[in-house]
Length: 175
Image (cartoon, rainbow, N blue to C red; front, side, top):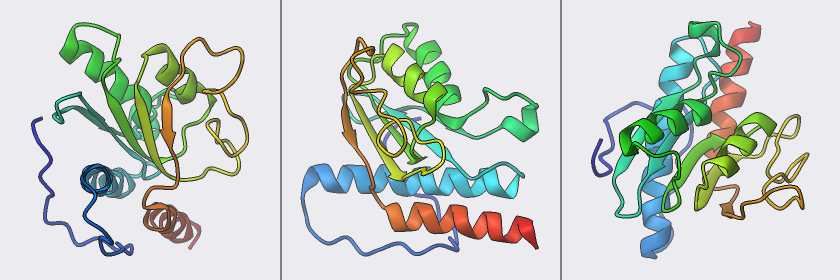
């Protein structure tokens, strides 16, 4: 997978300009742009446009996935779960303790549980999911007393771009 390289993709959603030169912000910005590109591909293939990337502690992508529920006819084929599975196989270990997961939509309960079980260090997500979000919007599984793993959560990263992508896809589906 390697280091971040952005593909040349004519994206139909707004990408705000980079506002400052903070290295952590720039790293998150680059990976979220790549996740948006992945999500766009999922939408083209008929699935809800959600993209997920697992990046290891040295900054290399070890897994990338998109929603594939429709393609695979699998209710568990969410981008986050598929990326975590792939990362575990690459690592030959399900403990992803030094990894960051980037995803364009706030994880649902299933995905939030899987993120905790994988021991992800940091979760960076884009749009809040006001119907099924289980990280901040509806539920808060990572900070629940029932959760045995704590992780850093950065929500709302490139939120407008992620939300616009989803809204545009759903609007087209309703036509």
